[in-house]
Length: 265
Image 1 (cartoon, rainbow, N blue to C red):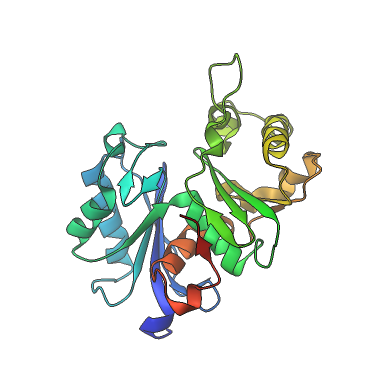
Image 2 (tube, helix red, strand yellow; image 1 turned 45 degrees about the vertical axis):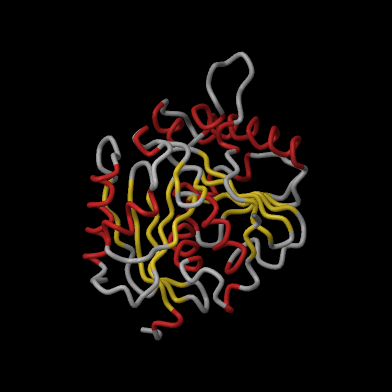
């Protein structure tokens, strides 16, 4: 393995699964197998903490010498979760970073899950060296988003919650991968919903590039070609590992090797 100065642990908490691995920060590759456990039913704070502990135990991480980043599906400001996307409402207004630090007995870096996936793609993937406006979307239990402009991340965008006028449901209820599974849609039927979604985002932001992450990105060949957009759209280089990699990368905060990735205030 690489030295402690060049590796970190990334934990990606999602609505259905909690994943983690040790990451080489030089090139964004996994140094261990990815460990995954199911997100506990109801996803309440104490149960999620125990699941994170299980992931760390299975990774054989017992010391705090290796930096740790945790990605979470919520708006995160100053360590507090301000929303609850596909997890318990008890996370709303919850001092989550302190909760995890107290429970794990160590410092962590804590951020929105789609934002850290965006950082992974900026530093090691499809958004690297892109000078325009890049929007990453994660398609899974919900729809997460990361907006990046000239290497600067604008945190806590919630483009999965764009509203569908007169329909009573937001975008992710209509077009997330979970909607495809729940309603047993074909790839073609789901692509029609994605077409509506990306057309809408394209109209609002005029991006230079769309990146598609989340678990379904490994099947990008089944649906991306069905979309007709003015904006190029590509799968995330790191697919569903982007959250792990980005969380690990941000765990060093303002370390010199992360100077090329800026997070806007």
